[in-house]
Image (cartoon, rainbow, N blue to C red):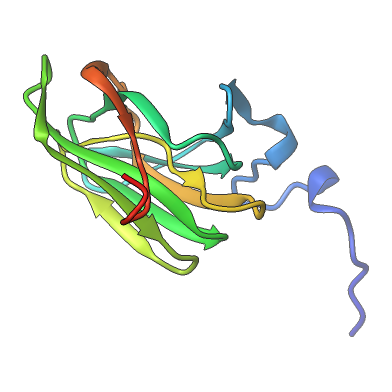
Length: 156
């Protein structure tokens, strides 16, 4: 039996929800674009969503972190990234806890609720692509007490 190939963009598939990347909500900042998917799945009671972050090389300078009230899962699908992590109580950041970490392609992270972090920066010229899966939730930001530069050992 032959089945005609059709474009998913114009084909209704019963029992399948489709979201085309070009229809996503964008949040653009200096060195990254957060492209969120509006599709959610219900697992017990939380609503879960996913999205893709495409990040470019940018100076490794951080002035804020964000945190969430639930876990967040990242899949790094392309490139090598530098990402900042810190402990926070929601109002201030423990500056002694700050870590800048290199994350290679193929790494999966689950960031626990309340853990401060910020969107990863591409280490080199190759962009970084990340798939993010998490409950729909706010991303409150906390300003660091001082600007943080991530540097290689020996360059401090």
